[in-house]
Length: 285
Image 1 (cartoon, one colour):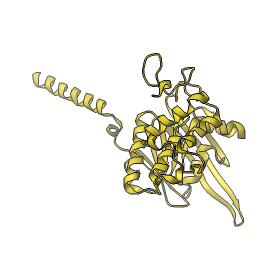
Image 2 (cartoon, helix red, strand yellow):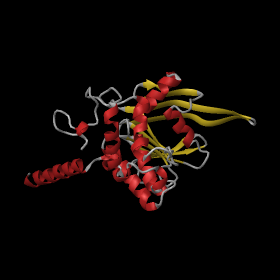
Image 3 (tube, rainbow, N blue to C red):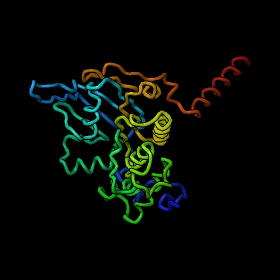
Image 4 (cartoon, rainbow, N blue to C red):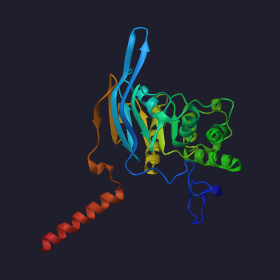
């Protein structure tokens, strides 16, 4: 199964025929994958100008998992809209993977978003007349990535990745809310984007399913994805390596764990082994 995943070296690959993914490159560059510079957003209302974002500066490196928290009206959704290009800032620059997205016209923006960013919505936004597999194939069709003959196979792989390949030919209404959210995540991964943006992805799920979705996000980060997640769940946010708190359109607080928490088990084992070697050497001296 999934014969397209085997390259010349026999290992699994999500790359296309040219050896690269649908983004046409070799992956995210080192350093800041996302760079928001002086982002200010002002909406004109009947009551006068409303400033939703006040000069936001934010850098996110490739492979980071970032949670964005704050009360309703704090600017969380507006910030995501700036990042995804759904809306544009009144002032400032949004640079993602070396592309200043404010310079893209509508057509190029849609193509860029389809290839570079997967979006997971709180209410799933699956098309009810398409099966789960067809929903996952839709971004591939719209962006014309991968050969048409292999798109279903790729969709099945993504559904297997989120644990619901057995329901590939079911319609959204016939599966649980948790499985609809998993399908939505599979769809967001369809074109193998480097970035996932999730807006309250566990807001409509029971605690057990929310935990499973959260665990899947951690797995994806371990595979190199960059994830920004808006959430009201303080417990989940507290388990994300980096948390941003917004209030009145400003980042008012940021938390990061101690540096050691970023290290994987291999690095921690190496540090322990080196420390033990040092202690042994000191005793001999």
